[in-house]
Image (cartoon, rainbow, N blue to C red; front, side):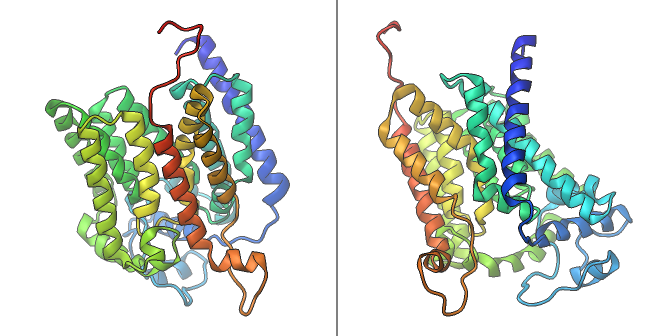
Length: 388
């Protein structure tokens, strides 16, 4: 990247970050929040730093590090998050929890700003950079972002992982691609579906992908001193939360096992389409959205991983003038601006209806985005000033 492009990238990143921070601080900083997800990774990281297993029972770790013990309705007895999630929390575990939570939130906002600026470089939308950056600042008002920050979730890293995988696939860097896919999967497993992008490559490239997956997949487990199947056995208790997620396994009551089958089926279909010639960008976008529909534990805040998809669709709209895609994108963004709400007993009214049907709302919004991606697939319109 040349000096001028690097300066422009830095400008877009800083402007997006400033607007994200202003939106978040101005509207949501004082909201009462739950922080249970960061607590799990925080105590696991502290235990690992103290030379013990990161996956000791939470009933042992929570009181040791100054937190209250588990209370119902909690279904998991150990931290269900995979190793990379714990390892990335280690820097925060070196300070007190309140400071760690603050650091986490600011770092995730910074990651989202970097992702939005990177999407400008990756997709090259035909708009001024400051307009693009200003639009990215609106994500500070988006429920997956601010509620994910409230829960202490790595919302920025999910978006960063998606755009990194996408960029490495575009650059045809198979070993690095496999390495990042593996690491991203061990941050949150729904990102594993992006491995289907390799179906469009040669056998030699796929062998390099497999090597990257092997290294990136086993190294975090080795660092934490736990076998993959032992972690999976402990994490399987999280399957009890499937009904609380806005994905098809949750609303259709398929359970964790049924959701895994649906997720595998979605990956198989995408792999076949990619092998049959579906473009890389189209496959990456479809895979990201399909994961949110099929993955059993697709929590509401995981839609931050779809920010690169939003950027790609927005670029297609700006380039082709596709009105169907435009309105689909607007509808998705507005629908996911509705926060995840807890209904009150015997409540009534429109807001209560949204709260009671929030999972269906999330599924429908994600389905709209899937249709929007499909509508965006096609040749770019050539203007009269361009050669045919």
